[in-house]
Image (cartoon, rainbow, N blue to C red; front, side, top):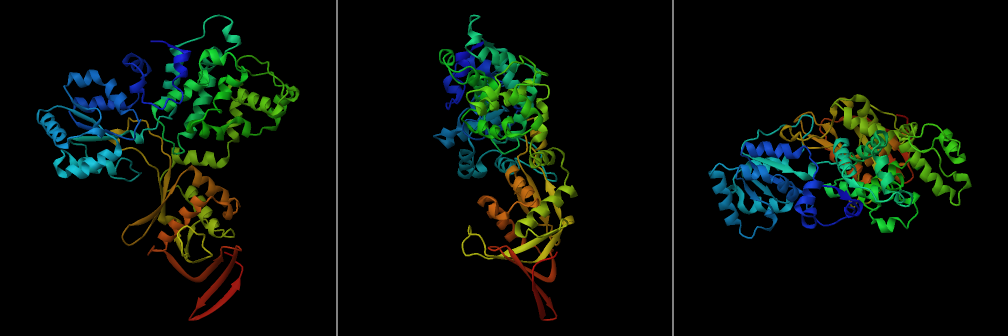
Length: 520
């Protein structure tokens, strides 16, 4: 089945469930095979009890419809919408009957209704303990233990990340390969969509677009398939029918501008990687003057910004075009701030005792509390006191620290029985161990917090750290104060958090000496 451009335009920002909007034939044509379908098929063949859970709009209904042939083949028990069960006893009876008959079962249910069902039915629900355990261990870390899969499999679509390069490429090519361009040779001169389709099929253009999408896959954003389809639909059609596109400025609706101009969360995140933000003196001057003629994948003629009516907007557009359509465009990726690059490398290559990374994070936390601190191998533990939880403390005191060897870093992953599902980690854990009982305190570090710690380590004022990160660091430090394995000293560092000054109190045989300033 082919899609005309007006059909594709409808996919952008469609808030309704695709299962409610499109026909079965249209849904089948739009379906993109992911790692989850073969996984579910395997468990159906093994006659497992499958709980397909997640948030509204995650695609549970669409998935079940796409699996209809194998579900019919195995005469599976199917509950397509367990969110609206009116009679729990009837549901329980039907489920037990199907299990007793040796049939596979698949139940689609959102996260909160599943929790309510577990609380309501308790041990009466077949596989109750297995369901509860798998819900708790939906994400594991380097050294996390995994449950042995027996009768039940819980698949949480909330953990599926569709912003992987492979999945994004499949989705883009599904639309490109099945699109019907505008009819008539004159259309390409007034409607950019046919040209967008041609250019987005180019391997270099695709590679650079997919690299940007892959980067935002690690920032903690959860999207569903309709968001991804809507994104690509927009950069092809601007989300408008042909009749409206023809009357708009051609350049405005070219894909390299549309990538950064949409209005949902995906576009907002991509705007951080807009090539316009990254300065390259040589390239920028040549683009501004119209002197960059070599290396273009398509046409090398463009409006010269310095001669344009709106030079800034013209330069912004040509800089984006350069990134996607010039052989040197990849040079702009090297200009992405180092804290971004460092974070992506951690998620990709981290092992739990990466001392260099641990040292940098220790230094960032130390400098948040005391910018004069120079320790990389000892995490200072600060005690603060405040009457209201979210108020900024006036004073912090430290005479304890934890050594680098007490710290490890943990990156999340899916359990091995779900490893075929698309997943991109969006955080890692900075874990500090207590020695006596192997308990620990941990800090969850996402891209935003990692950037803050990296900048603070380089001298960024801690007063300017966003409130949510300040609160997170103070809470982490409060938990660390109970660390029984912390090393204590007789030197108390007293930090005035208002005027950013330090005072050292040395205690020696019930006497004390004090001095202002701090030389670690």
